[in-house]
Amino acid sequence: MRSLLCTKRSRRLWVKTVVISGGNDGIGRGLALTRLERGDQVVVLGRSEVKGKAFLEAAAARDAADRAFFIAADLSLVAENKRVVEEITASFPVVDVLVLCARFFRSARYETPEGYENTFALEYLSRYLLSHGLTEALEKSEAPVIVNVAGPGIQKPGIRWNDLQSRQSYSGIAAQMQAGTANDLLGVDYAAKRGDRRTSYVLVNPGSTATSFAGAYDPVTQQQVDAMKRMGKPVAQAVAPITAVIDAPPAEPLSAYVEGQRIAVDHPALFDKKGAVRLAQVTQELLAS
Ligand SMILES: NC(=O)c1ccc[n+]([C@@H]2O[C@H](COP(=O)([O-])OP(=O)(O)OC[C@H]3O[C@@H](n4cnc5c(N)ncnc54)[C@H](OP(=O)(O)O)[C@@H]3O)[C@@H](O)[C@H]2O)c1
Image (cartoon, rainbow, N blue to C red):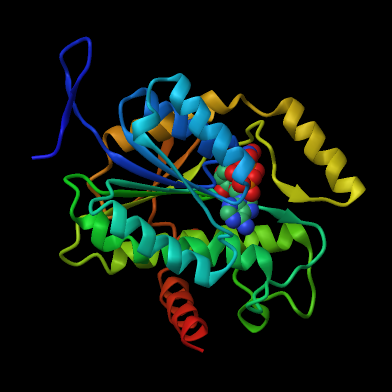
């Protein structure tokens, strides 16, 4: 039996191993520190070594240096996601929680060295690879859960099946919207294939939150982002309902929350089962090619 943590109220909580992509900043970082404060072991995945070091220092300041880990990785690269999965499974045989937060907005189209449009690669493909790649380690947990922090519950344009990589036309917003839809479909497909597995998939829309809004913005979009930073809710407010889900994951294979409120996942336009099967198939073909 793995170690137990006793709180002041003598309530017994499992010490969880929580992996957070994009845990270097914004909601991911807020969650990472919150989970450390609750006694969990936290593995942050991020690109910036400087921010990774700052996370480890923040952990040490909380007397949690031995429970904090940082893995530097560019998650827009398939090869890096595979390396990270190998590294995590070699060091942490059991993963209780996977939180997916990494994002980077690009006003201008950028193609990764592997030939994928960056938003598709980082905000969808990485989440596909981490979700499936860490499933074996998650299945060893007593209450495994994947929390994909994206944008469920809002009507978004569908997947551009004939131009997944936005080669014919690109806008940063459209690429983000497509990634959001793809993450909804990832959740639907992952849950549909659950079979004997126990890992629950939870889609979370935190609502407008004042984070770092990581990105490379054109001047007009930068102004809008600056306004969102001023008007968004504090990170702690977005973190609270997510951490509640981690403490008590829903039993259902798929669930979704908008700003802490659970929403139905049977709306065919928002959680399209056929589209989910098709996207999973296309993704497997892309990764195999
Ligand atoms: N903030 C909102 O208003 C809002 C609203 C709805 C949904 N969401 C969703 O909530 C999630 C978290 O958003 P946020 O606003 O908290 O994020 P954020 O503050 O913009 O932080 C993004 C994180 O992604 C990491 N990242 C960027 N490029 C990366 C790469 N190539 N490889 C690895 N890591 C990379 C960054 O780490 P480095 O700095 O190390 O690169 C950073 O930790 C996202 O999925 C977002 O779509 C946010």
